[in-house]
Length: 410
Image (cartoon, rainbow, N blue to C red; front, side, top):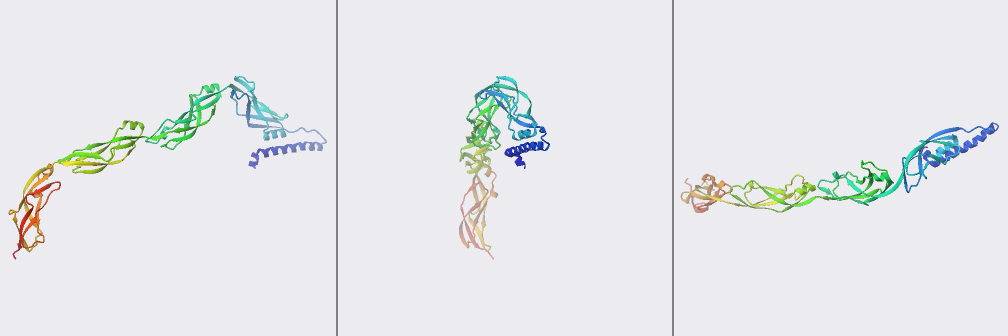
């Protein structure tokens, strides 16, 4: 039923039927009362939000101060009131066809109503402002929230297409225009160029929206977004000092430059990145994988790690270690062994290595032996073997010994 009541054709048909019924009822009632004239029932209705029209030179004038809607009270015979209420086939207007520029008070008028109805309009009159209608071209300024630009990216100068619009309105309103903006809205962080349509806003100096007509009222705003990159050298920073007896000859990188990302201000102040090499623990040639170290504000670096090749040279010292006894190993219990040469069963060593490594070395730091495992009776020449501390080398004064093996006495 509600849907039927909202249908204007249903309302019109219903009103027409009511009017016909009431019209036919009056003569019938008269005939039943021997043609006595009974006046119709008078009623009134308040109609709200009745639109207002204004008639004036729309090409050259602008009217402001006129309300969009008024309240109308209708009085008269019930059929006519109900029909007008249902059909709303009347018009409230102001006639400004002969109006002059300036402020003036005008009365609301009604047309299209039955002569049997009386209309009371609230308000009955209003003061309007009539001004010259002008059009002027303005440049549109694009704006956007720069906080939407992702870290490590920057936005270039936005462009607007078209970059100019025609604004039409009252002369004093046009004279108040301070800003014509197209704002690109959004909440998604930007890391690439974006183009979107934006509504044109016309504002005064206090950022109040002005009542004007804008052609076109939307424009395309493009914001160029790019990654902030810069290629810089990778510097080698040495930490510590080489161990004693070790001289650093060279440090080289497999990559000599890195690409960094960050804000424009950070990149402007960043000239290099670095790799820190601790040479205090390097005793021989080596290749290391180390991180590329960046300064504060740099958001990304490529590559993140580099290979570092370190070449060193050792400066060796030498020292003589004397009278180290020869031991016999691997002799079966049924045999005895005698070292014939060297007859004193002692070996002397010349030891080489870093000064701090060989200082303090003595006979007890080395083991010298001959291995006679599997040998039987007779005289044998056996290689002399030496074990000693790491990081040093040595040279014995003899490389072999003569050993006599015989059966042990029972």
